Image (cartoon, rainbow, N blue to C red):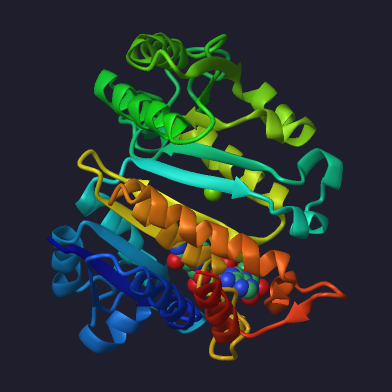
Length: 357
Ligand code: NAI
Ligand code: MG
């Protein structure tokens, strides 16, 4: 039986980086069926909608979605519902993608790109798991009102609600432990349980879920401390699991530790293991169509797709080893170029990964 994969290249550098990633997927000799559909501004131009019904239907039918990037300045004046970025929100919602996996890996060869000292960060390999559909970002009630009590009674106030249901916490905790089982078997749950009720509930439930994973070493950390430890000794972590708000901030912090936006993959999963896989960067319209884009974040996203949605660990590891090999051989796209290395185009980087496979 072959696995259907929806390939959504999108805008800007999306088509260029996606071409390299699909070459790599195809070369593995696995029973994969790749079907391409328009998304973002490209879909708006063709069908008047950034996420046309045919594209959404394909994404729902597929085992996994490989997504390039969407967005371009030329769509900035469109009403919000027609903007390319709406396609990502629409896909997240329709597929129920509640778990966002953001690895932060710093290959030793690229250690100079980090703003941290190489001896602190070289060889970094951590995974930040962010809950994506709950927390204060979506909690009701929220809005503006007149304060009814406190020192500012009678004034206008803005308010949001931080809340997490038991199911939401349990399912993200399970993904955290399962990811840790596939890696270094260490899970750090990040919260603010000294101050927040939501966090105390989160911590209690994570401890309960841990009973199903006796091999994983569980620790807990307050978010302010986690923000410090990420810059002091980031390699101490393996997998970090946290809520939507804390994860938004920590995952961007961890990405910056690596200094190479063109290298970072990401995944968003739902309860049935279906997932959307995309590079962490955007559509980079400033360099589109010039062969300058780094395809490695998208190629590494394809590796995550194999690992997390198809359970093809060996094939995923093969892609990752090929990427390590081309970096060790000194090949660099412009964004990661340093004197003494060999500058290559988007397509040449794809060629090199294929050869290394
Ligand atoms: P961006 O990530 O597209 O670009 C930031 C900078 O990094 C640019 O200088 C770009 O040239 C460079 N860059 C990004 N990816 C690269 C790659 N693979 N290789 C080499 N250099 C790379 O972020 P920006 O400029 O803020 O946004 C551009 C467009 O992308 C906007 O329309 C934005 O809305 C959209 N966007 C889309 C996302 C998505 O599709 N998931 C995520 C973030 C932004
Ligand atoms: Mg963010």
